[in-house]
Length: 289
Ligand code: NAD
Image 1 (cartoon, rainbow, N blue to C red):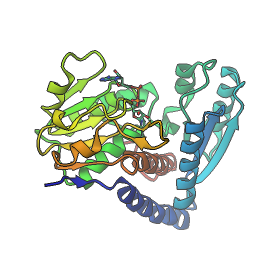
Image 2: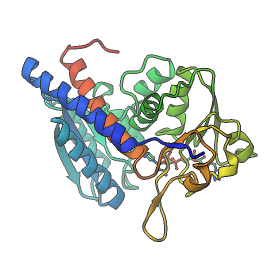
Image 3: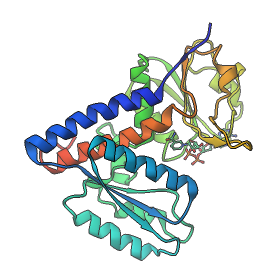
Image 4: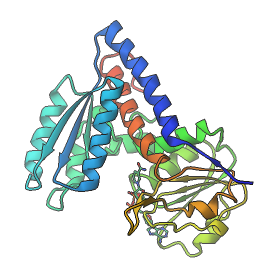
């Protein structure tokens, strides 16, 4: 028996379509056009691809995107000035600063400068704290996308063992928080974990966010596990692969996301959703939570 493939591309397209309808109504009923500022510093090729994808998704849904593509030589001060202007711009409901920033820029200072109410990526410490204490406002996009995929795949984390590989602020830690809020029993494993395979084998739900191609082998997985593979790794032949050995995993698991076509498209759809929700909050159309 082969596992099901969770089609992130289709699930993300379905969400974008829902958002497109909602944005159409916001425009016709309230004259509200949600807007996202997309700030890219430097020439990192992967970041350029991500930013293009985000701008394309905004266009498809009817969200205005304001691209600010700055040279590698940009200083922290210049970037803070731009964020200050975007913070005051009423047409901008979400501010996204594409990471990683060039080495010379103080990333922590930049993330703190984004007003929490426009923090479409959900990385500001206030938003991180609200997620941790159980009253999230802006949720980080990739972990939120993981939870959306689980829901659409019919998987309720309640009472299940969830194993998260990776402890980054962007994916590992926040997805663990979300799984905990959804009543899973959560284990976070990382580069210093003693017996990785033994830990992963306990998981009814496994979320891999490590950045090591095919690290998780088929025999690391419990039979019937549901696997969400966040990793995006480029192989020597130019092809992309995840953190999980997909071919080995498929006969063992109940369901698994592919790479590409799994979490990636969901992340972008959630960013657009955050922008739409932010626009509604800033226009007083919904409460703060
Ligand atoms: P990161 O480098 O910040 O964190 C990686 C984590 O993996 C660390 O916590 C580290 O402890 C752990 N780790 C590293 N090597 C390990 C090993 N050998 N065994 C166990 N744990 C190990 O990465 P990140 O930003 O969390 O991203 C992780 C992966 O997810 C990357 O491939 C990235 O490209 C991908 N990603 C995808 C999306 C998406 O939209 N699909 C979004 C963000 C990140």
